[in-house]
Amino acid sequence: MKYKEIIKNKYKEVSKLMRKQVDEEDMVNNPPHYNTAGIECIDAIQAMTDIGYEYYLQGNIMKYLWRYRYKNGIQDLEKAQWYLNELIDVKENGNKEEDTD
Image 1 (cartoon, rainbow, N blue to C red):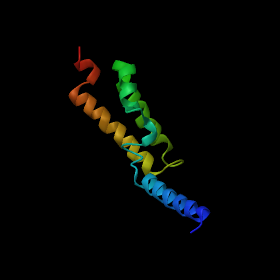
Image 2 (image 1 turned 30 degrees about the vertical axis):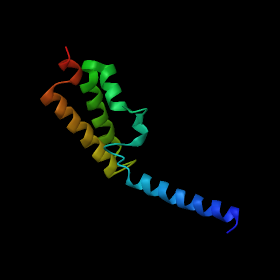
Image 3 (image 1 turned 60 degrees about the horizontal axis):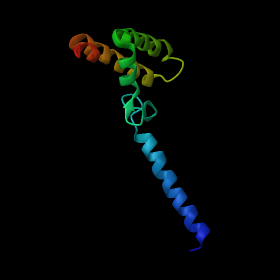
Image 4 (image 1 turned 120 degrees about the vertical axis):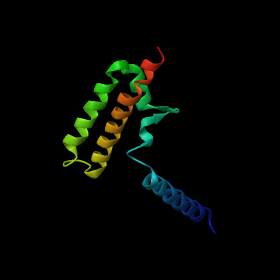
């Protein structure tokens, strides 16, 4: 097999694997674009907003409910549900930042 053919075949294999990985990623509960250098964006937002975290969650719930018909359909409803579950957890268990005081 010629060198160019080998590279072409390897490129196809890698592309196929990358597409499969993207398809398998959970874009609601753990989207990869919200994790940089091992820091989850939601954790950083919680740390930065302190007691305002509940309002942040409430705003995102409203945003995803507002746009689900026009943008991502069920995925946006699932995101709204994720934020609602997070808000319920915060109300039941307290804000993690508040617990450290």
